[in-house]
Length: 136
Image (cartoon, rainbow, N blue to C red; front, side, top):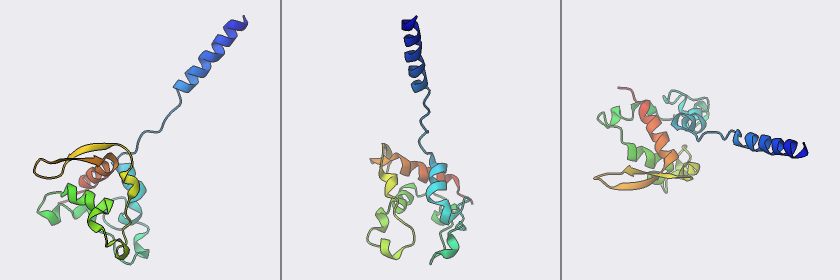
């Protein structure tokens, strides 16, 4: 009887461990909500709750494609988010550099003329979400 109870106890522990829920990795929308919406607003138009206190109005992220002849400059947007194209200018800008986006797995992204570059997956997801916000 003790062996049966012990076996059941071990089985229940194994079952409970198998049911432990690991939160899913963030998607682009969640990353935007966590990192961008405070300044750019949930709609990306630059009217987030923190915007009034900033020295510069946050950009309207819904017009990136419109300002680029209808094409979303994905690589340029990712470079702006990760701070690469802002290197050396960070002190004069309001937008922070989002180093946490550089952690974790990478995916291959075409960065121009067929060149595939390993790029942080979270950075790609965020840029793709910003692309989904585009308005004509």
